[in-house]
Length: 219
Image (cartoon, rainbow, N blue to C red; front, side, top):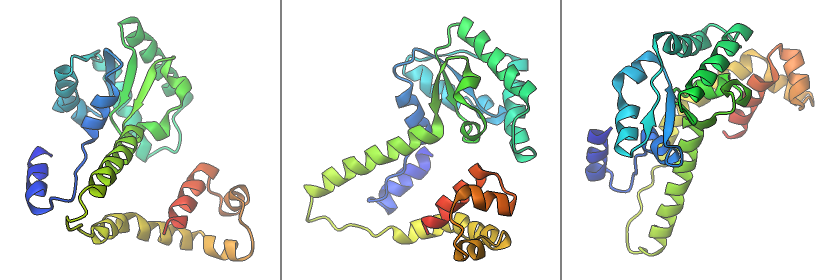
């Protein structure tokens, strides 16, 4: 990322790259001790641990069995639509254990976890959701950029809409394909607009259909 950031500063000086790790570390400042929930690859890379340690934030390491629970939860995301009750209880017990070891907050380093788990699964620990904090980080960055741009009217602004179109196209086309497969546009044309009704007629759960509808509405 650092190398890419350096290249971007030279080639695209008006395009600011944001690091999800920077966003998470900044959000952990009020928590002197945290635990990291991520895949084995994320944990073994040490990228979060190193950055948190540099900010004097302690990390409660998960033991082998605890890490296996988190890794399997992430892996099962691709084969299950929900987490089994037994697995949720394992995560709650895990959170109780790390809380006893001094942990104050859990970093959801894997972006899949926030869509899988509920607040009740964390035994009262604070949650640092990498998805949420990156979004907040991006908004703050845009506000800072707008403030800077307002005082530098002589600077040429680069139009990055093409970059965004390319990036978002990987989501747009599959979303449209799924909507066509579900006959979603035909149902809406018939006057059926409620998510609950559409979910019942397409046999898709409400949360999934709501996410699809939100993405389609943004096109």
